[in-house]
Amino acid sequence: MNPQDTNQGAIRNSPLSAAVPEHRIPLYDEAFAADPHGAYRRMRDEYESLVPVELWPGVPATLVIKFSTAVRILNDPANFSADPRAWQATVPRDIPIMPMIEYRPNALRTTGKGHIRYRDAVNDALAGMDLNVMRTSVERSAIPIINSFCTDGHADVLHQYIFPMVFSVLCEFLGCPPEIGAEVARANAAMFDGVDTDKVNTIMTNALLDLTALKRSQPGDDITTRLVQHPARLTDDEMVHQLVLLFAAGVEPPMNLIANTLLLMLTDPRFTGEGNSMPLSTKMAIDERLATDPPMANYCITYPRQSVPIDGVLLPAQQPVIISMAACNTDPTINTGDFLGNGWNLAFSAGEHACPAHARPYGVLLAQDVIDQLFDVLPELKLGVAQDDLVWRPGPFHRALSALPVVFPRTAPLSL
Image (cartoon, rainbow, N blue to C red):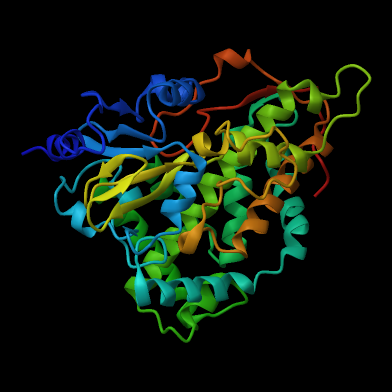
């Protein structure tokens, strides 16, 4: 029997929810990527808080779109496990999105003592970061990158500036040399875009084993060294999976946060300073984007340990429940429109699997410094196409542009 049929049948036959429609809303196609907020509004019109969706063709799930329901689920590990292995055994192993959701022995995909061990190791390794050097690191990386296109008068800043900036700064904090970083970058991009599972895992594993071996033999003042030297005594295999998590969380989400924030600042009069008003700050734009368009829009997947009734719906055991941070953050019952310092948003998740405390300021400060550095050098930056002509990358998890073209007056290269 198709797992989708089982899942739909379990919900429809429950007296708690007898009117769930036959169709599931796809989260992976171009139509959803082009207008997710329109999709969330339609979901709210038809469903209270739990929406039948497909993460990929033939991969059913339940999407949580109500803030209070999401917080309840994320803070209930006794009923909602982050370990996908029981579900994973029921689906084809070569689903293109599998690298994003499969079991890994790391803090994101484990529970209990294993989760505590991995999370402690990662937290301790991140705690050693000196964020005071962030601005210097950004400036050092930004000058040669901006020099590569500043004389052209136009650029795709997503690929020509934002990605290399985010990756180079992360590699510096991780102690990852460029030749290993290039392989990781290739696999990381493929993972988010749903490329062949075996190919992604092979490239990523080989590169991260090389990084682990390097740091065991040549330790430094970096996150990877602190991981390999941690009292948890992580094996090489465990090191690979902690580093997969750090690269996945440290590249794509910050890259999307920066691009989405920059788009807001280039198109919204509150940030462009049109008229006589003083433009709002980069930090305010970041806070707004974390609430309204978080870089990971739908994620934080859990699996009910047994059938669980939530909001009048019986969620089937071991079937994925995915949190829509974007829909929950814009839930009319909690979204006041006041975004500055909004500690309530779920961009960093909640509960025991929330983004580590030391990682949050890293991501926000990185976004702020990368954007400010670009505007310092190219203050007359403008969007290069009509906003409606921008293309958003399809995929169930991210809120990500395919490109961000800009124009600006040609500028002489900066001195290094």
